Image 1 (cartoon, rainbow, N blue to C red):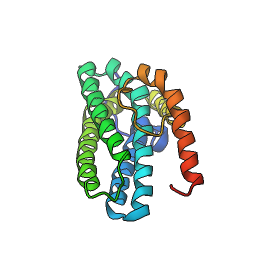
Image 2: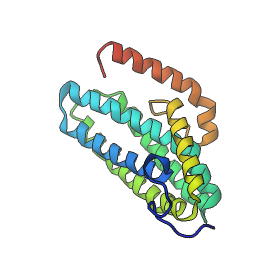
Image 3: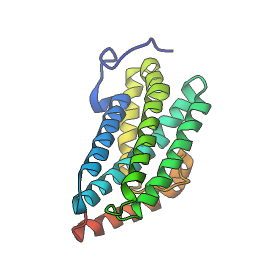
Image 4: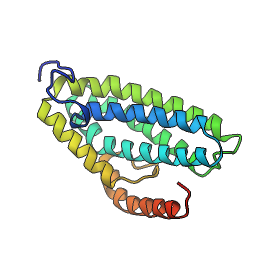
Length: 195
């Protein structure tokens, strides 16, 4: 195994390092939750659509790239990844239910707050049980390669939650068709001026 290292000593940082890339995205997700909570009316709907897209794309990339790597390269990786996948499945179900709601419905915000707590707990678990091990035990070139793979997965990922597709194999089976449908729906929504 490689010696323990941090982002600076690895010689790479930012979006060229898979861990730094995903940590930045975790921050963006927290900011989007803040934006949805602070907004009202159409602004809340638009912010929520951006949050849905970010979560769907981010989780798909982790499921296709990071979790398989963690499963193979972290002691107890199967158990760690299985827990993350179960958290992701639950979050996708909640996100799907929220997506079908009017963001101005009085029951929307309590459900969003519950989702936020779950998503933030999930992100902390990823950072602690996957990202720390990956960062400390992975060669810099592999961190670069994984960052490129995450970006490629995000470019073709579905933009909406699809509960039941939490593994790389499931994403590859349903992902391309779901991504086309999701992105067409996004284009229609944008053309209609709805986000």
